[in-house]
Length: 402
Image (cartoon, rainbow, N blue to C red; front, side, top):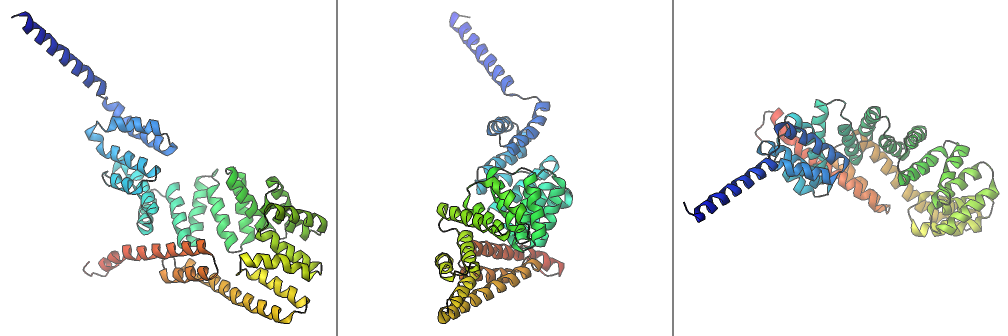
């Protein structure tokens, strides 16, 4: 054999050795592969992108772990807000064994983000039926119930979530909001105290303090309300609530000072303008009361409480025609709010009634509350989705053809 032949043989050996080294480098022992999925799932939950990518890189080259790869890839898309891509990846997995719980949970969240609320609710209920103390299932079912206006169902799941996660502020925060919306002030105050005890982040702590004060003031707990609000310093909303608390305690001068500071910081703040109007009326200065109340109603024309105070001011000024006009408008808006309250209670008892939610949305639009109207329209859409999902099941139960 010539020198050229030996060179070709040697080159072949070198290439074979290199390929072997590459294969050995890429090959992951089975025991290590078994640990990859839990490692990747933990990285997904804590938002560790580099660690998740490292696991995906290993699983992508392991055919036996293809479903695990697609589940984690779907979770990555979900956390990045790519919900359609996430759902497509999650559809490639098999929800059995160790994949079942995360597959149901992530798919349910993905469907919720896509607005497919009824399908999401079905998956979370399935998850809860298999894991009775599944905190995330309770959390998502509470959120869905809240979105639907089914507040009693929401409170039930929030209570379970609070039991399972004793240090979590979130169930107490949402429960407080529900109680406050329905003027259940003792329960609202208790919920927000519990929320604050669990150290929410700064922007949510501010919200919880303000909401706690809004629950305490109607209960006559003025001193406690004023004390908790001090933490927020020169926050205009906090100053207005502090002013109401100290005014209710009979400290007129301090109240005047606080509301004046609040209006310097936020000239259009509703609470400050409304309180100033009430304070001027209480001081028998009806003409001075007209100014902040009129200013408030220019921005919030359906604020029936402010319009009632304005009607009182006109009565005291003996401006009968203006008092009559404001009283009529106040009564019209108050009737709308009463209707909205009644419908909200109906919605609680009928969590999948789309018509009552559409009527609520319409009322909110009439009262210039676009965000609330949007919420009720979304709830109506979800209720219709629920009906569409359940109808095939009902037909099967009745023995009808699909």
